[in-house]
Length: 293
Image 1 (cartoon, rainbow, N blue to C red):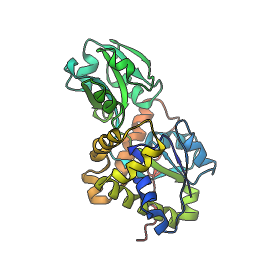
Image 2: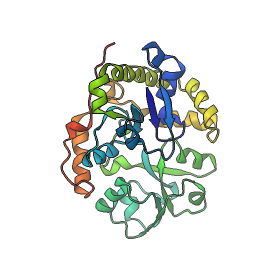
Image 3: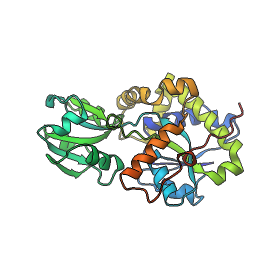
Image 4: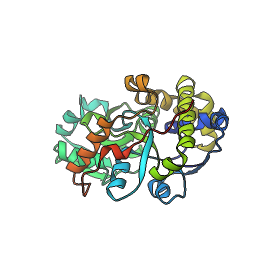
């Protein structure tokens, strides 16, 4: 099976690398080949049949289905979005609402992101100068009035280790909270190879369980492939993301589980933002593969 990642080896893929390292895929007769990386058009790769599986965000799935794609989600790594807005703690803001209502500053975000559009709808950003995100914490470190988008496993840790005192507000606080690091496939693939995809999901659940219990072995594997992130950042990132991966819902329903209610809320929000041309059936966006353990 081919699996397309959408970023470099980092803690968000910890369960995948642990399942591979510990032979959990092989135990179920699966040979998983990783491909993709930063900038990879994962949804298109899955839709075109170039790969059987890929990693995307839930909002990408809904947007793709609006455009006629057959992609569906089968596993949601992050139950709460790890996307956030990082500010200097000295600003004293207690929430996103307080931050955006404050004296303003510079907000570095990737233009066009659905959650940025959600912010624009929900908050008054007129006091803020919005600039493109530079994929670096350097501008943040040099500007006490700057806020920037982050992934909780990366930029806040880097900023703190370079002497800053960052405060992070999760995007989820705004009410926009799509599942993230979602495993996607085509519904056609699910019909044809449902048992194999089910085996992949079971192995991935085992991989994430092991990674949550002890991230060090998989972190070492990922660290050898991604030398831009050191061992301490891997360790801190794994700890930061743990409560976003495992919560009360997954303790009841299993790691990676998803609910119709969450997908319905997301589809409604994207429609309200004018990002969908039609109403997308939330039930069509995800599927539970056949699990035979």
